[in-house]
Length: 128
Image 1 (cartoon, rainbow, N blue to C red):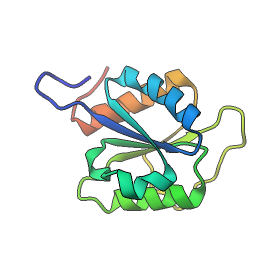
Image 2: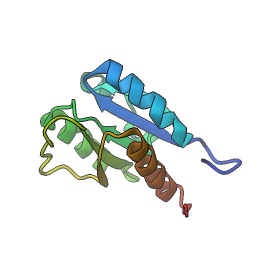
Image 3: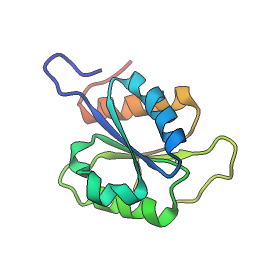
Image 4: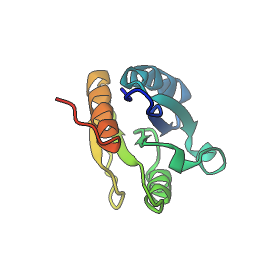
């Protein structure tokens, strides 16, 4: 959670299944962050990537789209963290050549814990 006077952290969740994104966004709000969901086609026109502390690339996103978003984020002066999200039931997707800070399975408790840890690092705080 942000400290008093600090701005609320922001998460961008990108994938292709809007219902799945909405469910994950509800879970991610437990981090205390504002969460925005977009399909990959909406990212270039709708998202100012520097406004986000964490970008989560869902397993429903194709590798070319994931790479494009990660590359755009990496070009920023203060790039956000990138978290790759794998399916619990499907095959593990290879994401070669994509810069990322963490890869997690889609289990809600793991997702919230990892997102919270990355957000706390972004804000310069430590969690015990």
